Length: 151
Image 1: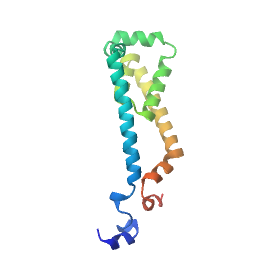
Image 2: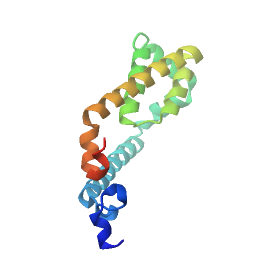
Image 3: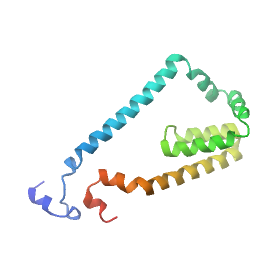
Image 4: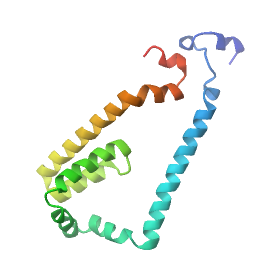
């Protein structure tokens, strides 16, 4: 890229060099992703090493055991499932299709569908609200100013 290309506006192909636009922000993002991955890996290893994962695995592989767990939380089970789905949309610790299949598996086709729909709706609404509140500041820290100004 020629040096005179940087004197033009971003819409004309000038502006900041995209490779060097925010190196400090990229390093912070990489450090955050690596730290999060390390925490999840440490938790998974701890569960596996202590054997605490076996009851959880049993719930996910045995339909009768899953029903027993749900029946033990009977009046709260649908609400907990909807909250789990809403939290999954915001925090993304679990894949949504797996949680939705589990809902159908545990609550049945129609009730599972309605609870999954409600949880996804609440999670999407929460994500929208968080984006409206924090989105512009977050994007402003990571995007080039010329690209954000029109919005």
